[in-house]
Length: 152
Image (cartoon, rainbow, N blue to C red; front, side, top):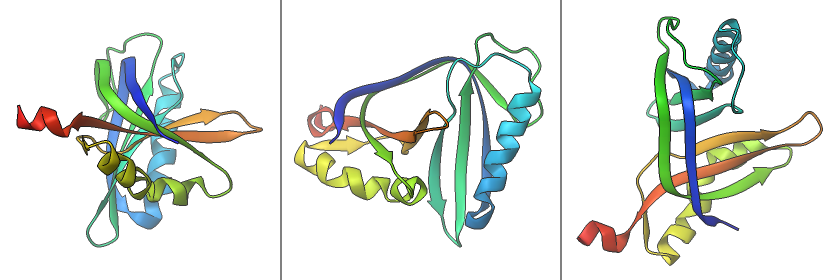
């Protein structure tokens, strides 16, 4: 089931982009988590990311994390946004043993919903990590416009 009235709003967001082979994706994520841990700042959110498949088994991933307070000095390659806002968005939750595969097929999951509701996706799929050590899940989100909005 999809939620049609979702959004993403975060303050003090640090991010970093990676273009890596598919089999090195976990290394990119680990690098981001290690770099943000070294910032020694209180977190305001769980991490979230957008992932796009590229030719030749490459992927582009942009990792994000919201902090309690802004940063003045960032490590090289990281970006800071004082505010991050996307809406409206369609979202749905995924959980279970194979969240990575479910996330990889997320666009296919949303496609019938977009067609049925005459919506056009305008952002990549964002994955927002949630849960704890006992139960982890992710919320998949895509920004959209209505077909009518594109005709105006």
